[in-house]
Image (cartoon, rainbow, N blue to C red; front, side, top):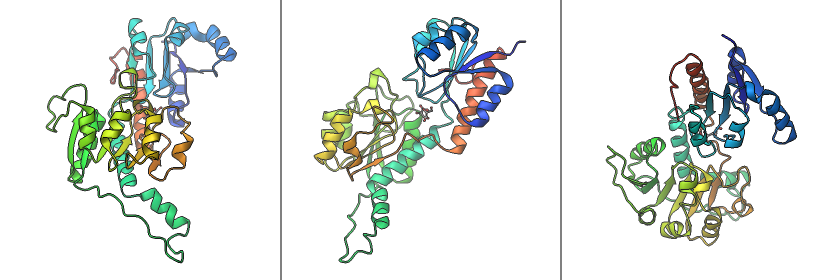
Length: 316
Ligand code: 8YV
């Protein structure tokens, strides 16, 4: 059989890129503009498979340039920038990488929660700046206890459930909201997000992104969370109305926020950079050697299954 021809929208791990080259002929997608246009005019009709990611995604316009495309394999669990319905209309299966990143994302949610509650990055800055040894001494402020606190989870999917599991180790009282109660879940379901926010000491966002959840966390939810409440977001920046969040943090109408994701990555609002009651990370929830290797393997497995005539192990 001829080597299948792939279009690769984004560089993955070096070992995954090497594995792709071993089995396939790979074209790296050129930067948007005239160069990409020329590339797609030339190789578009020959492409069998598209390799992309939860960040690079794909849209209908790109699919239109790939008239013989047969499979798509995406690195990541998020589908918000992948036009899966457009692929479905053409009967093109889309593979993605759920499960393998659940633990790391849930771990980081907890890392963020502990960081903001216990002022860990703030304490680190305090020690480095020499304020601990300063004369007269400058007291480090007291923090918020995590064990036994109330945790509200917005979206009890795979990742939300893994966060709840970790919370049980901290003897936290956990409730959740979502579109509907999750079958088999024993945690209390709170239908109204604002009601959950009002109840919560920590509100963790673990919903998918996309149009359905855009600005779900708005000024009303933040008001309900209140001056003692903390927001943690490991989902998508789009789920939080960032302007409302900045306003709430500046007014101290919520206690703090710990964020791995932002509305317009990689740009982070200037106001957040100067606040002490926030912890900011550069979208790294899945970024460990182990998990990224697992995600890369899933990208390869989805492609290999397709070209071997098998169903995709992780179809979207
Ligand atoms: C990745 C993610 O950082 O899987 C996702 O949806 O957001 C992260 O795991 C990234 O999107 C991979 O490209």
